[in-house]
Image (cartoon, rainbow, N blue to C red; front, side, top):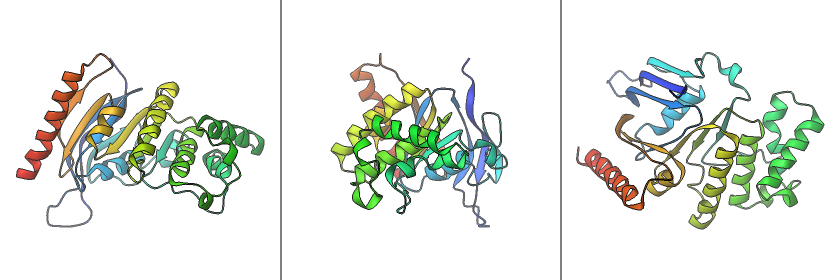
Amino acid sequence: MTTAEIAFEHVSKTFGRDDGSYAVRDLSFSVGRGELVAILGKTGCGKSTTFNLVAGLIEPSAGKVTVQGRDPFRDFAWFRGKIGIVFQNDRLMPWRSAIENVALGLELNHAPLAERMEIAGKWLDRLGLSAHAQDYPHALSGGMRQRVSIARAFAVKPDILLCDEPFSALDEVTANGLRAEFLDLVRETGATGIFITHSINEALQLGRRILVFHRPAAIAYEASFDKATSESQRNDIRSAILRALATEQAA
């Protein structure tokens, strides 16, 4: 049986309102070690709130969230270097060069200067940016900046990788290439991943398991597949996802 790296047990989240409004309500699911799970849903369905709960940025109002058996909110400092995050926007520091941005997590983990520069340089090279190591974010294209962001996440060798629509601001050609590279990196490193998206195509390309959320963050549909899944079966999954999303609209 696959060990659960991430687990939600009847988790609910409200934000101080007393009208019974939930961002997440009675949500239960788990992510096994080495799994890459895509969470798909419309804007406002609670995907990002779920992301923030896993990252330990907020705590649940009810229920229990565990990551590697620990509470990510209460044990936030313990997860430093164990969780890598890629956001929708690159969130690079404009006053730091590309290599200095990649090295940030290593610096926070107190790695020696020479070590962190060596590791950061290798990751920039891996993502095709070695010639831009000393460039500052303003001199990089959107795709390049997101590559730097991905390199920064992987540089700390995270056990858990969390991605919140990291390619949504890019043109489709650039995004498609980055998705393929990202998937290769996840497989190479063996990281456990949660990938937030509102794109069905992206979910099918990146995930081996898809969770479709309805508002407030509740699982409306779930599908698992692998390399052996036929194109016909994938089309069936796509149709089921569309039905699940349409059902929420009708409701």
